[in-house]
Image (cartoon, rainbow, N blue to C red; front, side, top):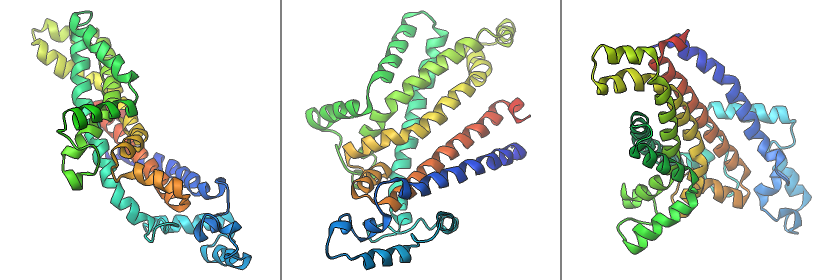
Length: 315
């Protein structure tokens, strides 16, 4: 295992994480309104039950009266101890709200990427080795269709077919309520787009690799086409495919927000929408931070997989 390479990549990720924390912290001050008013209530400024003394008291208690740098350092120190603050709206710390919602979203994302890879990579390989055949044209049409379909539209179509016309799957709720069946429609709705992108990238990369001299040499040595394709060609074609997978893993958060809202799944997307409606800025801060860290972790994992598949990258 290339530990030195991994250590360098982790060190390079630290400035990114610091920048993410700065952006997340700035949300409270870039958003319109006074954070102290959000603590007291959305209509505190126009409510006669709240006086200026109450607002100033909250500002002092929450530390809003201190310089931004001092507030950021205090907030960052809390992050190091796992303290993301307390929700303005719900009587729980943000870390608990995220800890309750994150497993649902992560299971949705991992299930989606697993399904997308299981569909996209074989489809792209078959399309490449059967170039310009009927199979290739069918695979390319499916890929273009998958890229073109909006997530929300596909989710509604799947609900119409499998929850109303043929009621075999639940149309809302989480895994705790319905088990694995609750994840089938959401995963299928999100997986189509990344599966199509993976298939297109796999086909393109395979076509390029299949023309390399080492592949021709393997064929000339009498190796079976299956061994040439899976051992010599596919492994060397996977690097750009892994890039797409890592990038799509981060982008799945956007799809998760839509799908969790449609299927009423208690995940990060559902929590984010509710926090935005309630103007719960401290919860939004925590969600943005955690989502960004998941994206950084996905990119770091991609870099590590690069070094495993192609040792030359380590140097």
